Length: 171
Image (cartoon, rainbow, N blue to C red):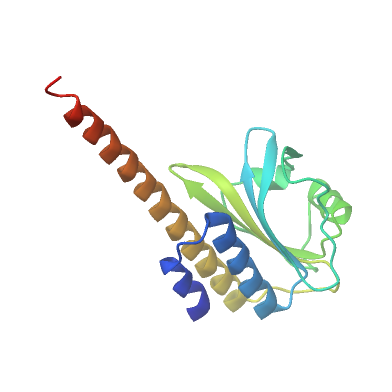
């Protein structure tokens, strides 16, 4: 977790920070893949993806992917290999070859704007409570970094607008 918390000070692009976080979590849990999706009404974009060695991305492109029903909830979803699934959830996971997943919504304001997904595709997996806590904390750090960037950009924009107004005040 220390390596993830250190990313709070990073000046890298947000997508690069997401990528590093997904890699750290993925390697720690030895899972198959992890993604961050930005969601829209009926579509989603892949903002960051990490794949374990030998894994191939399910996505043939990163923009305008069809948004599945499972990514329409505002609560954390934990699906272990032995979880009883609804038929639509089971069909979707089989389609994307996922045996177990943790899906964490990322709030932007009062709505879910993104999801972080941590997947096991190769072997059966049962997520433990400590696994979920670690993943949730990693996503909280990603959220904090993103919100700081949004606030920084907002302040920078406000400052530039104020400067422009003051520059033109005596004209």
